[in-house]
Image (cartoon, rainbow, N blue to C red; front, side, top):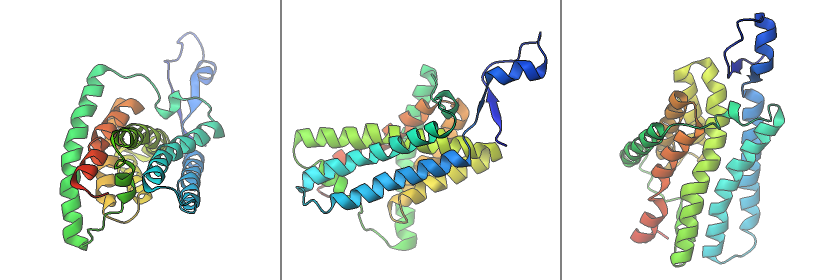
Length: 244
């Protein structure tokens, strides 16, 4: 049976059995993880494979593909929530303090620096320098409007969708096995979801940073802030250096 989290202290005037049941909610577990990931991959990969057959303009295709990154995570999270628990709070969707949000900004900046170092180590070990994110660069290369839309999709909405699923569901579920296992294993799952390529080390850094701040703050919003800061320069930098 899955463990439970109690959001309120038991009433000392009642028995333990009668006081705890009304205030206890199930914690996300393996069923939510599996369903969430299956829906994520169905939306991300099945739909994207169909998009490639439509012969869309590269900028339009890039924008749709980039938007799909956020939709896939949100869809996976929604499926996980609706499976059993049907409440947002057990998934970490709860308020947090301004201090934690500021800490999230700082953690995101540090993670962004480490992202570059991790990529350099990856290149030295594997020799693989292939850029697999050309589609994102193309999405932002059609002018100011496409740059803004692509940045909103990849740097605001995608972090929201991915954090809801990978931290709110997966990290949350795996933390029952201990802090180290929960943080590292959920970060590894997050990185593997991005594929074994040059993005893998960056995703691993992001996964570790967001999982740890989620574990400490118990709020998904701190992880979202870290992820937003981590992703924010991506498309503008790509377009600026002409990778699209």
